Image 1 (cartoon, rainbow, N blue to C red):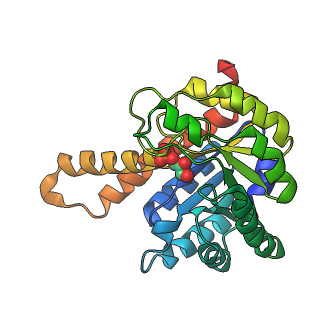
Image 2: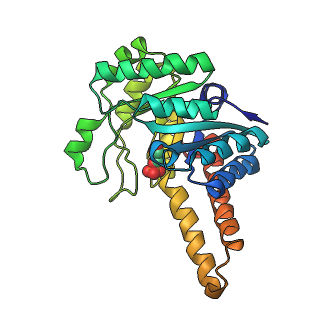
Length: 282
Ligand code: 13P
């Protein structure tokens, strides 16, 4: 159907849209198919390190091509770029959205790099996501987590000095597998939502959060949810299971197909919950 920007998807959508990390042809195909099976828009994303691996421009090209041919709206997204050059590279590859992550920088510098990327992106009709407050590390204790959370007093200044299409927040969420039960600061999210008004909010670190946490976040105003690690555990889990069923086959045709199908099922499930299923839990 279409390669669309994140701005188009997030503004029109009821509930939240899932964004899933891509590493190669098979994860990309599995994710797009998950969107098609659910009849919902999907965000196909790749991080800065995998996109910058030698030869992986081709993965970027494949992502754009799959989006163009998909039967549902697909946004092709560069996730967590720390620099301007990778954002430009993604835009040249035809991506429809980029994230410039200046969350590790002082506020003024985060604003400056975000504006530099936004100026180039707007000229090309590409959406921009920024981040305020750094994501906690999975090893961080409660105090360290709190110190890194999005400071609501920065949100108004950041949004008034930039023109981003989405804002990622840090409310106790972390990348990777959580150690113990993750705790999200929904009060903080509520305050940020009131300040940010119609700028869609993004929740990173989706792997390991409970359905109740997703539902509460979406009810408050989360419009995009990132899932990365679960793509990897799903894919590699299916790889090991399929290989172990017939070890001597070294089935380089059947194994990737099984992995792809497992990713499709996971993505379909998540998209449906983020768009509709969450309502049953609020
Ligand atoms: P997880 O790997 O924890 O799902 O987080 C993914 C993410 O937020 C990518 O930006």
